[in-house]
Length: 311
Image 1 (tube, one colour):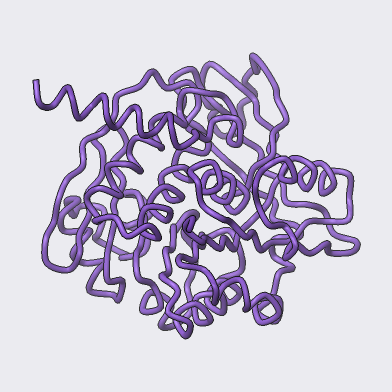
Image 2 (cartoon, helix red, strand yellow; image 1 turned 90 degrees about the horizontal axis):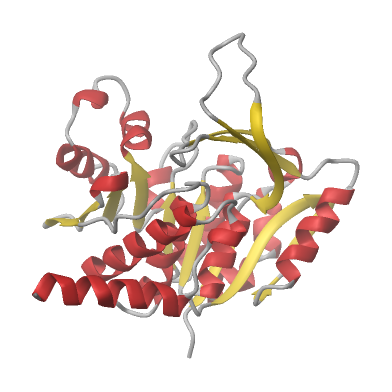
């Protein structure tokens, strides 16, 4: 039986501008290209998990505007259950404004719109798919109280909870104690830990985060791979070097890959290695949804690296 993944998260229309560099405050920089994509961390992670072979239900909200119809239409072409998507009257669909530089780095500003209209009551109404899933994937783009409610439903149903703390914002009391696996980068880890944490090394960040409640912590390190900590052992997974074109969606490919392999019962070290490969591949294609890799491509990359390590 395929892994069962439930994703609760944001759905966006992404406006992507390519530029030679990011502007300074008060400065206008000429762009070198423009594209419209479907995105949002919820949509991205749902599509990524489906392409990696999972049976996926997506819970989220769209506005009653033209872009909401576009986003729904794009997702309808993927193997995802969209029956729990709601349309919010008189509200715009979430928008992400993204700038991408030649090295693939990006900046993102989000106008959440319908995303922030999703409430804890909506989670109660969608409790069935959350409870039936092997893994719940959540992120930081919805209102924290809504995400917390989804996690509480999951925990009461023995559904494994993965929280990708991106973007980082204020969290309700006890939030991190509802998480089985926390996925963060170094900047997000420092934000969660507060003052003084920016001078802490990656290993220390993992240990400090685990002390706040998560059973497992995965710290992404970009070109340096990732660290994972299970409360006892700290291990490093090497990166898969790629020529990066656009890093948008790479973190979502990583989180989704972790979720799928966790649902399939893989060891943490194998799941993180697979996730590193998925995230690396997602940097090689512009846009979020177009870049999310399929299972056979990720497995082929992992296999090639494995052969190289033995020779």
